[in-house]
Amino acid sequence: MQVEPIAHIRTCYGEKFGIPRQPGLVEEAWGRIEFTPDYAVQDALRGLEGFSHLWLIFWFHQAAETTWKPTVRPPRLGGNQRVGVFSSRSPFRPNPLGLSVVAIDRIEEVDSGSVIHVKGVDLVDGTPVLDIKPYIPYSDAYPEAESGYVTGIPPKLTVKWMVERPEARLARLIEMTLANDPRPAYQKDSARTYGCMIENVNVSWRANEGEIQITGLEVLDIDRHTIKGN
Ligand code: SAH
Image 1 (cartoon, rainbow, N blue to C red):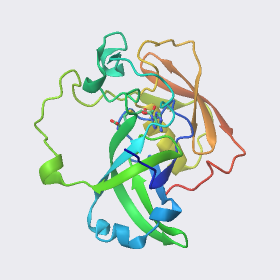
Image 2 (tube, rainbow, N blue to C red; image 1 turned 90 degrees about the horizontal axis):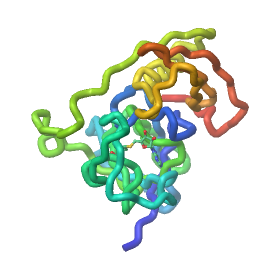
Image 3 (tube, protein in one colour; image 1 turned 30 degrees about the vertical axis):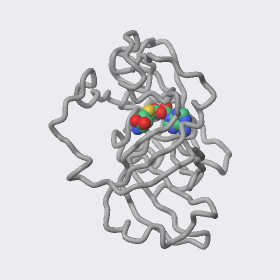
């Protein structure tokens, strides 16, 4: 078997820490699917404009070097209970394949082919995409399905700015992202300052009694993350 990326996705998340744990949790979380030259064929996307969502099958490239274990500790179980890797969505798997449903924002034609702008991503910037398929509600959605230890949508925390807010769009992206409480399940330390890279800013924050406080914003001088959201 041999697979190769058909595309790479640029996203608002510059590093793994802080990324939502599933797609759709942060609607504002944008991504841009850019095809590799061999697959930048407009015809390959014909008809996709009629769909609102698509499946992404991707390579967890930042986990691929880690050896997998039969059991993992999902954040949903507080990080101290183990379930089988195949009962989890953990990136650390025998074949590090990820699966996410994202919303199609628009399809743009550029000189190098088509770019699919998507929303609601849970992927780190630069993730290799192996396949794209349309989301088909009659077959892909089971609203009444049982989900074992994964009970409902995780609660959101309130987010407070202790520093000056950036422009509204970026402020909202940061707030919505942090509201999901990115802290590792086993680490709920109010003295600790965390950092995550969202677009071209390093956001410092801490968590105090169920409230996230943003304590610092450092604008980074890097092109890679200054890509404008869609
Ligand atoms: N929806 C996917 C991913 C769930 S895990 C699935 O079910 O397969 C989501 C986490 O994967 C994110 O919180 C982020 O920390 C991590 N992640 C995202 N992109 C990654 C990548 N390219 N390599 C390794 N980990 C990644």
